[in-house]
Image (cartoon, rainbow, N blue to C red; front, side):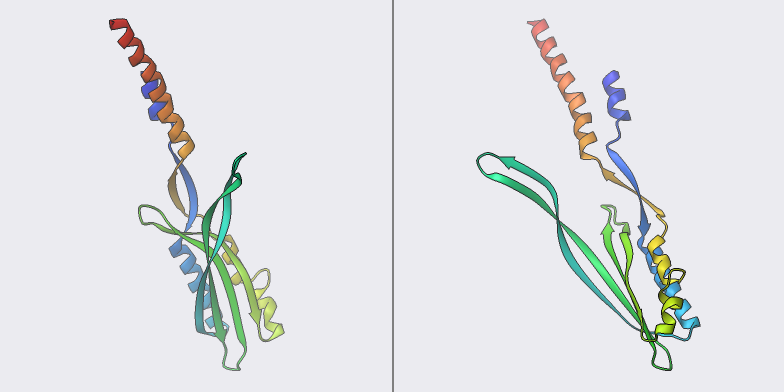
Length: 177
């Protein structure tokens, strides 16, 4: 009974709060609307994705030396351009990691404004400054709850069941002999 309680109350899943993809897209649309109010129309969007490999683990063997485990970290950068009737331009860039759960839920992580510029220096503070609409993209709400498997807890839960169970089975086998 103790093993059953241990197994069922051990959490093998971790819950994380992330930003929905649709929340990111609504924020971009809000910026586009704000720019239209200020007389700027959207003139283009460009997207690029780059792979930044990251070291997620290291090991050492006296025979082979040091080794590293690498994982891919794909970062997307979207750049939005705007122009007004006088020819003034404004553009901003946002970087983020686009992800998807095993269940198909799209979300974004590490959303960050990584560039903002205006052709007219007088427009910079209004469109790119600290209180601007564009800067709010750095503080998107984490409005989606996702679950990921916690491999350590899963391994411990399975081990906590299998090891004592194997001792009990072995003990019962020797007791009947």
